[in-house]
Image (tube, rainbow, N blue to C red):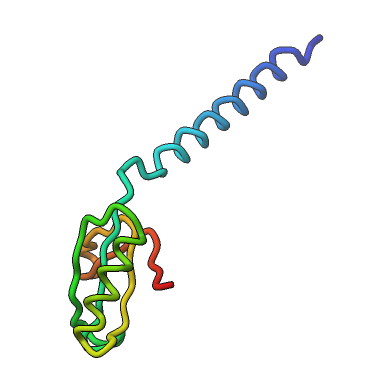
Length: 101
């Protein structure tokens, strides 16, 4: 039983490490509501010109809007992004996910 204090110390370190990893992981999860943004690239994907519309509550409504807008611009490419925000360091919008299915 000479090793009991060392075993207890190592166990406490592993518990603290596990708790830290759990708390870091849970803080990284997004707690914001699901909002979608529509991007219609009027000059093509490589151009910086696009029409953006925010605050769609589902992918389906975002897709519907993007398709209608795309038709107005000769079937321009489009995407819908989930939880988009402006990133000043990259000078553009960053989204959790982008899709155009």
